[in-house]
Every structure is written in C-alpha cells, then in structure tokens.
Length: 166
Length: 100
View: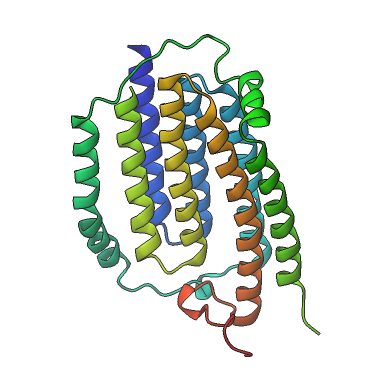
C-alpha cells in the first residue's frame, strides 16, 4: 500500500515537471524542472529495488548531464532576444498532443489488456552493484567495450567541433 | 505494479515526443530527447524487477552511457550554433551543410 502511494506521488511529480519542462519559455526554467523529473524517476527506480541504477541516475543524469546543461546556459549568457520567437507555441503544443494522443491511448490500452505480470520474488540483493556488475561483465562484455569506444569518439568529436577555427 | 510503470513510461514518452516536435528552442529539444531515453529506462527497470533478471538493468546502464556521450556532443553543437548565429533557434541549424 505504501509503495502505491509513493508511486502515485512520484509519477505525478515526474509528469507535471516534464510538462513544465516542454512548455517553459526560458531554457533555465526547463532545465530546473527537468532535474525534478530526473530525481523522481531515480526514486521510482529505488521503489523497485534497483539501488545501483538509482545511484547512477542521480550521479550521471541529475549530477553530471544537467549540471553541464545549466553550466552551458550560464556560459553562453543567453538573453531573451537570443531565444526563438515561437509565436504559436501553445497551438503547436496542443496540436501535437492531439496527434500523439491516439497512439499513446492505443499503447496504454494494450498494456492494460495484456497479462505481462509475473512477479517473481527477487532476493534482497537483487539490483545491487554485485548482481548488475556480474551480469555486465559476463553477458554484456561486448556492449560494454563498445560503449567505451563510443565515449572516446564523443570526447574527440566534441573537442574537434567546439574548437575555434582560425 | 509493472503495468503502472509501463503506463507511466508511455505517458512520459508521449510528453517527450510532443516537446521534440513542437518546440524550436534547441536546448528544450535536447532535454526532450533525454526524456525519451529516461522513459525507456523506466520500463526496462520495471521489467527487470518483475522478472528478477538484471540484464535489463545493464541495458539501461548502457543507455545512460550513450546519453552521456550524446550530451557532450550536443553541448559542443550549442556552443557552435550560439557562436555563429547568436540564437538558440533550431530552424537556423543549417550551418553544418554550407561553408558559411
């Protein structure tokens, strides 16, 4: 029962702050409300016993990526005249919502009809760093190495792109 | 609980798609993409808890790593765009194809 109440509060926070995120005019407002979304998603991870992913989500997403975004927003010194005009923002938001609504309604209906729940009883240690690390370094070793190459490529690419041309 | 998690993931995914299509501010577009990745992560984590299998958690770990590398590239693109055009409008993003 307690879990359901917590889930309702956290999901409501995530949905509301993500709606604020896509509709705010200034990028700093949407970045700050996106932090709320990410932290509530991290708490939702902790609710299903995924403790390692909870920590990773808070450190990498809310800690590193969002602070990078906020740092860039402050570093670029964005004023109101630098933002795009977006005269018909509300119309666009409502129109795309009407387009997307049937698709998500069909998906939600499918999820409600299906019998996907297994509810295998997991041990207390499930989702900790021990089990995730064992799976990562046994079954998923090739994607892990590929991700390290991808991070290197992204590092070199971002440095090359942002370099000032003479 | 799994169904509730998946429904939440569908709702967040649709919100992210709406933001991705309808906004022109490039930073908001970037954060909508991050929201899409996060909603996929939610349903992966819920499935892994339901099946008591940690492969899906590793998958979402890899998705988070991909999102981090994407963040670095997007930040340098913001800096280039703002330096050349002094605007955050995504419609002005045609400088990659031409030689100024």
